[in-house]
Image (tube, rainbow, N blue to C red; front, side, top):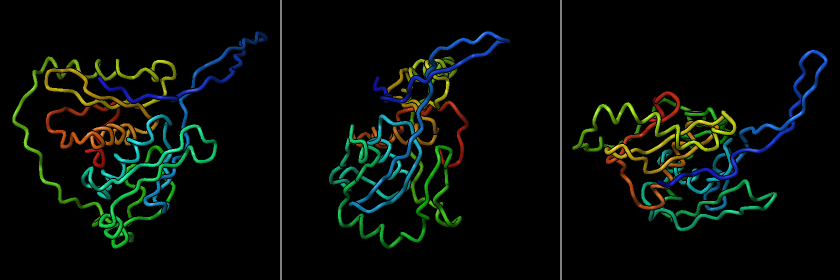
Length: 223
């Protein structure tokens, strides 16, 4: 199984007061930090996320937003891990065809900072929500007992949640019940985008051989 975790938590000092008694200890908290996504060097979006899987998050986000459709649309992805300034930026270099199409449809989006709760924060009209994707053919079924076991498999794939209790999780589950990939993030949309971006980067789309399990509700934009 591929688990997408990374530096998603940090230790903070905590003082607990009970009457006149004070107890000092450390606790783990989930990290939420901004990520700037650029396309060919131009600013496209700023999102709040849990650090640690910025490349798949950026690719999954751009694929979900219909900016890129195929792995061949991406020429390169620039990251700056460890850099105190550039470390919160990802620059996705796309082909000229994709860049031209993006320039033609730039009016469909507002360039705003997106919180980890965002689903449709950057859209300006109902029409911009339309997608021309065709339904994926599904020619298999999954045993009801395995469906009932999926939440347990998802929970087992959340190591950072174990320490913080503060992250959403998402997982791709095969029809035999095995988890193929998982991700955690303060935002449930980000957790799904990290999975999508990982599979996109590995040219393993479409995902009609998997069940998507999420720790929160399966809202419109996630579907």
